[in-house]
Image 1 (spheres, rainbow, N blue to C red):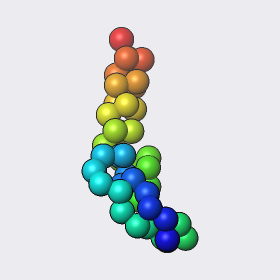
Image 2: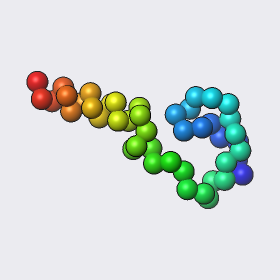
Image 3: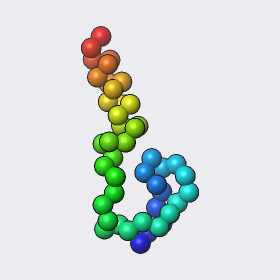
Image 4: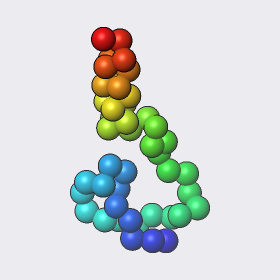
Length: 44
């Protein structure tokens, strides 16, 4: 167990198992917004 930040880096640190599955970072709202912005800019 390690003391780690939650996905997204906001909120209090919590103990998490480094061997357990973690949420997919590609599916995070921050990455989705970034990809949407990049793809929208290419269409112009």
